[in-house]
Image 1: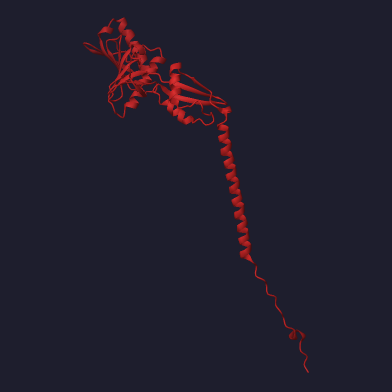
Image 2 (image 1 turned 45 degrees about the vertical axis):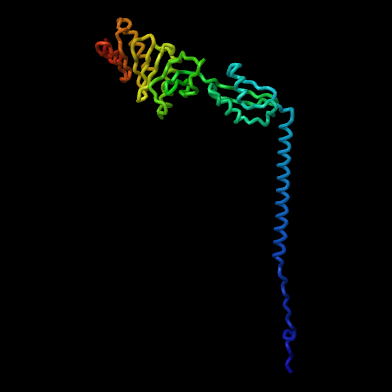
Length: 284
């Protein structure tokens, strides 16, 4: 009789693995993450509200109320005008002042070139204004004042200074006006800085030709001087030598034109002939 194997008689039972609840666990983590984000946003919103409320409280506090406005760089009358057009209210807080808007309002005044503002806490606003200085009168469709940077800043009005050189030769609306005016004013500024043979007060007219070259008319001299469009310092020195030479020879009253736009040479036109002046060795 065969013996039955012990192993054969035993039934093998296999354990079934329980399924892992992946879906439930992931959903729980996601929900917890959303709760944390929500709480973070609530905290951020609370901080923002506290900041807004705190800023509003501080800005309305009388401790930062604007009590003093100090204007430097201009006279008292113009200072009062600037405060008037600035849009500043005396009841405002120094914290809430819109500095950009105030600067734009003040710079809209024709006699103001630039403005610097500083909040001096707790009660003072300092305004440093740079006054525009007229350098010449330019003749276009009307007469206008030109400032130190060659910019037209206002129409000539009654009461404005007229003891200034007059710039002629430009046409209203020409695109080259800005460039040519800067050139003319740079020449006028040069006359103020250097001990030139011609002073600004003696310059009656500065004519701008179509190519941008300069021709000047001097009140004490009976002739015009052509300067070209560059190298004005050297040409003024040369003009001084020519005028000195003509005075010594008593020929100054006979001159009709001096043209300095010939490199290192000068052409002197007399009423009856033309000669080359100092610069190439020739003498009249």
